[in-house]
Length: 600
Image (cartoon, rainbow, N blue to C red; front, top):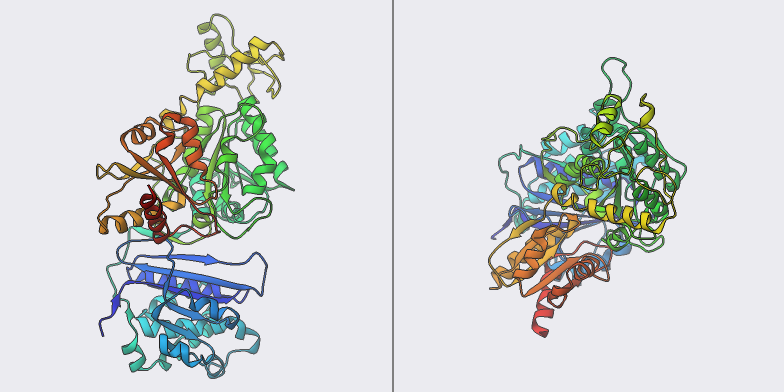
């Protein structure tokens, strides 16, 4: 039999709260340790325990990391969803299950029944641990069938349990017994196998939330207030975890970053704005419902020109929506956030490495612009483990923007004709100078206002003053075009048809480009990484006859914003938009593209 090597997918279905995450991660990281590219996704319910949960693995030596529609191997330890799970399996695929299956399954699929109770009994597993250790049965069976090195399984468990042998050994005992029960004919009949490659030493495995937190800590974060919300909670928890490892003052032994769990999202963003006004590099993290609550406060920060960063790890809305499913549904809301005329820098990381980079870069941009910066990640990036190049230390010094100190104020006043105002455009770039509390120079004081104010921070309702100040606020965002992450031209085949995407949708789009190329249709592809849009975006729209904007929301929010900014090209822009709580697959994008092209 010709086996499929290092290019297949696995779906594991278990029960939420049964400890399956330990088994799943052991498999994922063991395969990674074998030098084979892999991506993983956890699809779980929003309850604590008892409902079905799924974990998918994609092994791809070609380097594809996007989600797939159909799987090659199904591991089912939750019979309540078996019928539905089988529909996701390719014909002729492998099924590992804990109960006998009807003849029709055996005819269409390669079925192996795992004697879970027998293995747990032979392993002398304590009865109170059966629900957890039963997951290790599938680890042993799968390892034998596809060739996972048990040494790497044990390494991963040692890391997970911090080398506590009392915890590792019961798990490994079950794995070994299950592994040894698999027969040579079963291994021979399996269509899928792994072949060890050179270690991927220049990569690590982590998730976007951890990456964002580490990036912020390396970027000089000094304050973060937060309130728990799925799927953003882990970002703040990672700040707490690493703060005392990375940010201790060597002289005092105290942490140089403060992390506070607030009583709600309003308090969290209020504290963060206060810290930003006080001169600290500050950040909060939330998801869509929390961002809704924060919107009025962010209008205050925009109007009073206070720097801060908000990470929005998006989930499906509106309302409570689907808290444990992914989407890109907060883009329009973020673009028009708060009442009145506002504008924000929005960063759109497309992979875990960019989550780390934007963790520190967003703080720089906020202080350079003296304005809130919104970073839109999502559950797909934030909560799933990804292979990613090792993070690199920021390649530039921390940028604090136009902060003036005691000894600089008098010089500035002299240079400016005898006056200085907090909101005065001294340099002609519409970005004023700011002082921070604690400055001993009496001329440093000002009143930070969310109300109408003039260049000297004095209250004003004068129509001309209001207009002048808001025109200045609009003009200063031209500076964002110089410092924001530029779009990336991922594919340039000189085609007249192009894709645009952003964020985690990138993984499906880049693979869809290959599928279309194999079918004889070359597609260019531009990935947007920030708003306001830079000149490359308009140039791309101008050069292509048809533009398909691919995104994980219902209404095509990026497409709408592009049409708003470039109405002259609106007729070229088409939407490939889908919101079902899952990331878009290459096959889905391919089918949607062909459906629209064939209807033209």
